[in-house]
Length: 284
Image (cartoon, rainbow, N blue to C red; front, side):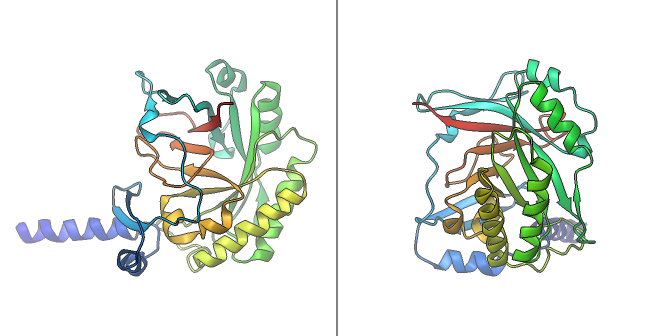
């Protein structure tokens, strides 16, 4: 029985380590042996990772202890720091179905980040989100600020530019007051075209996407989490873009600056109807 228990422990620890279809063992070892300030963090499965803080990347300015869920555990608050305040938001795609935009506004939501398109993680086909045009119309009419993102599976800079072109086509004529985000993803537990893309290539893709968006007159941004910031992206090369950081710990772990924080998943621990976000605003 003891042997079976140990085998099960090894299985679940291994499953967690490779949940992103990436093996970070060697890069962790390299980081551990290098000089610089060491940094520990946990992924969404509770697995601990170690990295080294890059001094070339702007440091986070907010105080993580000031982020706290309200008593009802329905939304995030930020208190005890007179330098910053937050606004509440959600991010929404076709998978969220019909949205009561007026109710969201009434419930205290100030902004939304809408998925406007995606690339199939196996087929590679690039498509607009079926509900985007309806969603952006409803969000703007309800008085919400709007940003957008594209779910990327680009394997090259050429494909990243194709994704930028789709986004610019979809948002043309609409009131976009928040950033246009590049959201590359590694797919868990399923073969995907992103499995063999290097962190270097992910970074190049993000840069060409953001520069295309910037050239068109929009604010460019990149979606990330701590694993991406530690082992995939070259964050120093992305420091000129707005970071939308995803982390479902009680407080954000990142040592790097970010303007948006996705702090809860739909139907996660908070049981939210949508993914929940905050925008961090510096007080004047």
